[in-house]
Amino acid sequence: MLLRLLVDAIKRGWRDANGSFNKLTIEKKILSVLNQKLGSEKNYSHYKNRMKILKARYQSYVDLFRHSSGFGWDPVTKKFTASNEVWNDYFKGHSNQSHLRDNSFEDYEDLNLIFGSNTATGKNAIGLSDSSAQPSETHDMNPLEEDQGATYHHQVHEDVSFSSLVTEISNQVFGILQQRWKQEAEEKQAEEKINCVWDAIKEIPDLEDDVRYDAMTKVHELGMKAGFAKMSITERFGWIKRHVYKS
Image (cartoon, rainbow, N blue to C red; front, side):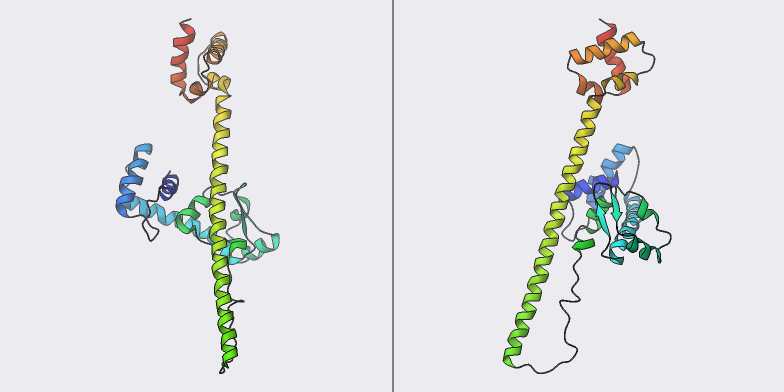
């Protein structure tokens, strides 16, 4: 619940210019909603402790990408990807992290948005060590060499800026795709729930079969599939008493 609320807050632009949430925002716009939904009494200290745990979890994910550029992320399976060689090399120093290879991690994308949305990973990581290498010896340059050096450094700067721009755009596009995939999944789930009226009727206890059949017929006659599927079991029973038993 906390992750969902924080992600929503980021999309609403509630973070400060430095990328963090101030205490007032957390208390008034995050914890107040969380406590209302969960019936809890979490305060700012609880929030800070939970964020430490979440950040440590996120750090274990980030360590993969820092270890090797061979690691990637599959947004469909929600799993980290790499060749056997890359995984085996990682486990040499992280023998207790085998779950990172086998498990799926639904929270990674949310944690990445909260703690490190600008972190480059896998093939998106930018390495400057090769392109920015300088000669080991220093000497006086003639004017032509100085011009060539200035052009070289200008080109390196342009290359780095372009790479940063490409990475930023890639992250934005990936975020848009993630939102679309999530929306499609939610729409599919809602549609499946609407089409399972019979399952919703069978969840109601102590109904005779004839009543269930009549209720199924009445729901379709009245075009109530969507509304009926959204009701609680108690509300469905009340609806049947009103529309089936009455008739």
